[in-house]
Amino acid sequence: MKKFLLLCLCALLAVPTWGADNDTVTVFAAASMTESMNQIAALYKKAAPNVEIVYNFDSSGTLKTQIQSGAECDIFISAGQRQMDQLDITANPSVNTEKLDFVLPGTRFDIVANQVVLIVPKGKNPKGINDFADVITDKVSIVALGNSDVPVGQYSAEIYANLGIWEKLKQQSKITYASNVKEALVQVAAAAVDCGVVYGTDAATSNGVEVAALAPAGSHRPIVYPAAILKPVKNESAAKAFVEFLKGDESKTVFKSIGFAIP
Image (cartoon, rainbow, N blue to C red; front, side, top):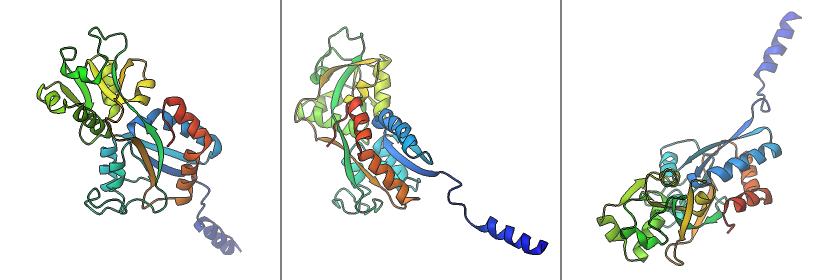
């Protein structure tokens, strides 16, 4: 009898207890989404208490490189289409030059839209910087821009190229390059630079900066953030459930409150 009970106990212990551990969804998101995604995770915890949302925030270029290198990621939200395209086998081969195939078919969508602004330290703009073109004048000694693999840096280059002053700005050696948009924001808030180029949502969530100018209309590509579930996904049903929440009214309210537009 004791032997029989022992065998039964062993059998019970061998059965996997799927509900014992919480489901985890790992989300790689552009740094500019930090505030909104943290708020959404708190809301989602109420809707799905057994699901843990784990974030990795950084520049979209850095996140793309991490994913390509094998980092575990269930959902990717990029601040630029290019970084998502580089992981999407259905994208233009001229962009996805390495034929990477990470995007789970049928899951890619545009989640939010943003705008680019020129910011200055709050209450510390003695020379009256109020235009993107001011960066090549004596009003500006140093400007913070995202580097070339950061979407906001790419948009900045587009803006200044369309204004016809990009080459001159680079020749003046006034640029300090940031590894992501939050770094540029911090530099401006600390008055370590005269001004910087960031997203409107970043300016809206900082008490240390103020908007000096909006990017001129038509000076850059539309800023639309793509999102997608990536392969291999650990728990597809959990990832899809969170994506549906991101598309829902509660998440849209959070995005709008921070300054994002819904495409």
